[in-house]
Length: 120
Image (cartoon, rainbow, N blue to C red; front, top):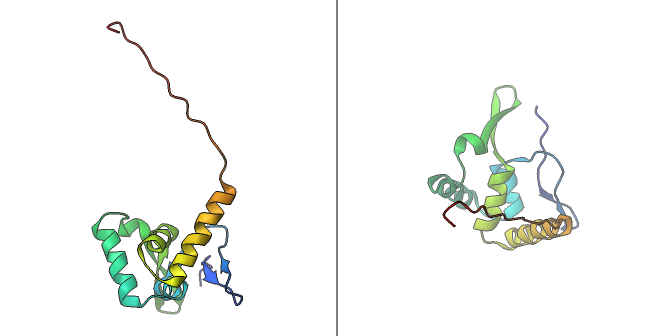
């Protein structure tokens, strides 16, 4: 069985976002976002149809037991779903993700240069 990192709710209703590569199953995302499987599947299919993400990049099948396999989705899909779905849990996930990005954000500078040609 392959070890995976997943985002999940703790018993005290705080969100646990591990470091490292995140891959989640449909049932894990249903628990995370508080939506029903048909809604989740339809939204994933919409992401594919709109070419927000490609299935061959976003999905993989892992072996969980003898003869049992599970489809898991990348963190990119989880992130896209967090901003596409609408539930109390999804809003909480978005707020936590944004807060973590803001906390770890480092300022940067962009330097633009222009080159003048002979005709200018």
